[in-house]
Length: 219
Image (cartoon, rainbow, N blue to C red; front, side):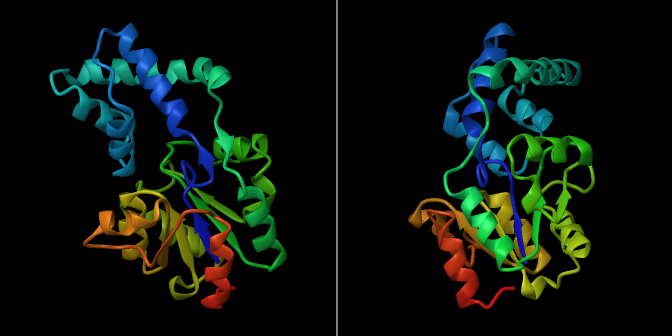
């Protein structure tokens, strides 16, 4: 089976999130974080409040929660201009996996209910490909392995027969702790950045996943 991360693995969402941070920070008279700085923090598996606390250490807890609320409110406005989109080739790869009878799961750090996550997948025309979904409302977010382990249970899969595909350090750590093989979607040189827990493989295009699964006899 194959379990996927969601943001920046299957969909392009960093630009959307960065625009939310830019817009909200300016309205709140806060410094605007750099795009790469934000990407690094999100890649560590941090939640919104944790990201804000790290970006703005002088803010107290009440101010952090107020910022987080304002940013969540800004999302519906920003997505109209900067929508979250499915990455090229994703639907074709998921369709091929489905045709091969491979079970497909999703583990996301989004604090969504099951209903909200399935609704987003339907909106993006991806829901039909997934057999199980686990969100950060169900289990601790990555790098904790709980979400992947819970997804394996939902799919009735053994860790040794499964692969986790993600894009961030938190994905690699979670996958390794869960005992699955880990593939990172990123630049070819990205593997070194994940030491001391490197992924099993780095691909720069999701279509390369199919070859890996055939080579490893993943079903």
